[in-house]
Image 1 (tube, rainbow, N blue to C red):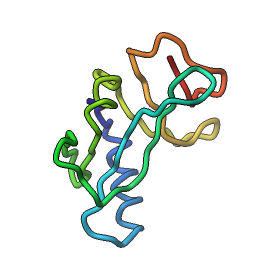
Image 2 (spheres, rainbow, N blue to C red):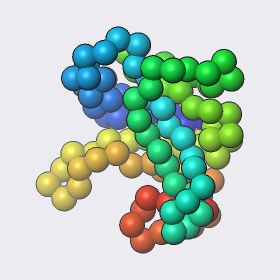
Image 3 (cartoon, rainbow, N blue to C red):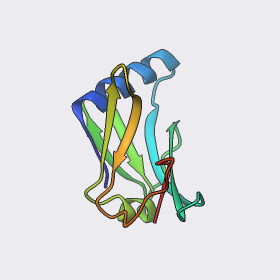
Image 4 (cartoon, rainbow, N blue to C red):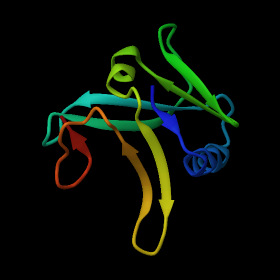
Length: 106
């Protein structure tokens, strides 16, 4: 399953705190679509299925459905905040190619 860097963990914790709702987890999923075949989806979720895989990073609970987890083995979610680039980025060694916009892969 995907791992969170320290920067990503801190940013996600801040965002969850700002939501003001207890029990939220970060859900990372892979869905069919995008110009390369698959796209990433990330959102806060309070509903955890029995077969979801879960990992805790500090105060952040990360969940992933089993199908998505297979495509995210060895992947890392990072957060960057610089003058040139701000946002989350997934580094997925399983992606054979990515699209120009960087939001989908195959």
